[in-house]
Image (cartoon, rainbow, N blue to C red):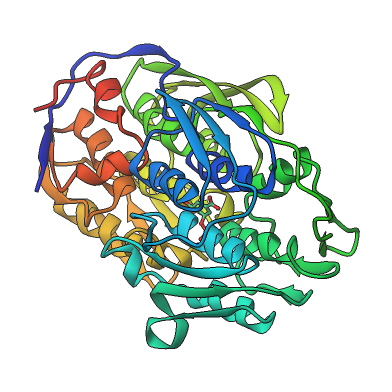
Length: 428
Ligand code: S3P
């Protein structure tokens, strides 16, 4: 087990950072969606993290030819998908497993999806059940609740499905299945979840429309889509660790370059601004979605905040936000965030366990927590194999040295995290 010690830094930092990891959600989608075309997709700045490389290997197992030069990737899809001669390993990636489930359900062949020990404990019924309802032959352990998932792909019925959770993974799985159904399908979620799938597929020529009545209409594909030609923007969820660092280290600042500014992804920055940090968004271009720089400056002690709305838009940033809450003045409250329980770890319990070890008072609820801001004490904390928990406590280490157990998981999403952190403080 890899343990890292991050030492307290006594110096402010002022960085302009163009090496935040490329967006994980978009990179997974680039790999999978390239298979809907009959031409070569060109992807620059693909995330070379373990999760997205697992998605790329699956594309190859399904018959695509992948040419890779560092993060420049060219994917030439096969004429027909190949039935793979081995299982498909999604690693730690819920996005990979859930999107591939919806995608493969509509193709002829037998496909078996598995993942690491953490992914094999995450709920899969949320995609398996609706896919079964539209005629997919799909199963998993515990009557379709857990991976490995076995799919015997084939014909799918059109559907009208109202999801009880705002999940982009569930929505995307159903959209991918809907594209292969025999006529129009409809999907609805109460709150919009991240919408990269709709934007990217429409950019490739698909017809997915949010109707005035709140239903998403998915028209089946009649012909192959145009290939992708994209430079993946930086990941705002990865950048957020350093945003928190700038907001809590006196006189520090950072400019995160070329990040997606998609509204469904930058809500946590707005919360951090609400806590008092000086934050600006500078939009520069629009490639499938708005892209630009985010500037974050220390602006005095943060104040506590209550977070109970738009949870799907900041769910991945709540671990890092918890570090900001731990040093803010007053009691911060997080509500309606039960989904945290089924992420790469039970994030409510892993965040609170770490904060308690650092001497911060917290209280836990089924769907959230309270954090009473105070002084972080140096501690040894466990990441529970969760990349975002590991990186959040590494950031806390800049304020008061931390030892973090089990940090190898950071390679799933942000392989150069420690390189950037070492520009700010000492690491061992
Ligand atoms: C993701 C959607 C979110 C997010 C995850 C990536 C995606 O999960 O937490 O890290 O790429 O679609 P849910 O769809 O389960 O909310």
